[in-house]
Length: 483
Image (cartoon, rainbow, N blue to C red):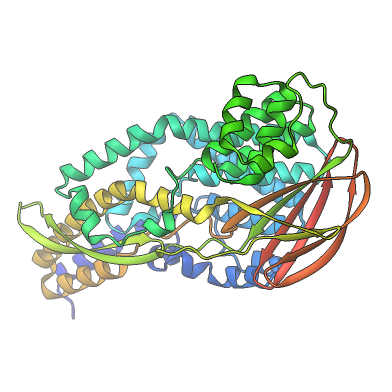
């Protein structure tokens, strides 16, 4: 029979565990998010998108991962061509993002969540939609509008996507500095963390931050052109070029509009930078004297694969306890595997000529860079948590004896889980390809991932025809939209 202190210890432990689970399911606390998503991602890999939706974990609106769950659902609905429902779910997520930004009690609510997380793990906190995820949200919402022939609605969304990147750029450096300072105050140096935490340098590649997305700027340029706003299109093509300077499709579009708009300085700059294949094939008189061939443009957006999920890793770091004793603790942290999958892209055949797509964004690289930048803040929370849990264990040991000590130890081990949440149904890589074609019905052959098919597209004079191609495993499908 348990003695009274033991009963008190158990009640105390259970009360703390339950308070940590307020707004969070037990499965969220004790099972990694990527494991919960495995069934849905397997169905997505096979092209069974409606089944994937049905396999998503159920979450209530009070759950801290509710917004993330809506993102997963909306993305899968988009792939299933259920654009109306996808649009509604993305709109719900956007409202949540707005509310989080505008709520006067945001800091107070985060403080409450952090108290919960002290006795559990980061999964007890509300999931904040990352900037790169927000920009992709608006890109998909823009495509949802395009599927309903609503170009003006699509332009609203693409402006929001670009605004997200502007806000991120302003906030990024100060946030990085503050998080590194806080981690240092807890006794963990950046050098010590770097020596223990697995490298993600290959996964990150050459990206400078976790939010600048050349794809959103390129799609923005395409839509601005469709709306007859060539100057705005040119600005965003140049932004895409700044992020992905070696993408030939972007180079061609920048050169084409530079010459069309008579951008004298840029023509001189890019004339020296771009290959002669680009500058000579599309060169026209700066004053616009030379007429372009009357035709239309085929723009192909190629989504490939599924973004890898975060994995849990354990590292050992020296940490000072509340009694100023230094001990080594094991920290459960999220990480991405340090590799990038290679994609062959799209090979398009038209009238005996072959054209190759080129990558415009690697979302895994953005996600890995975002996680790298977040790591000081994650480690800081882990240090606070480990010290608090050790203090709790000692208290329960004093009050509950061996039983309290064992129960607290078991709970601490079971609840030490890394937060592996992220928008895990996104594509891994996105490519683009653009061709000038004669007006009318045109047949093009698409070759990707070992699959080949011939499609017919309608090309209108001086207009864009947008083809969105999805390639996941053995699944390949496309949508065609005349802008």
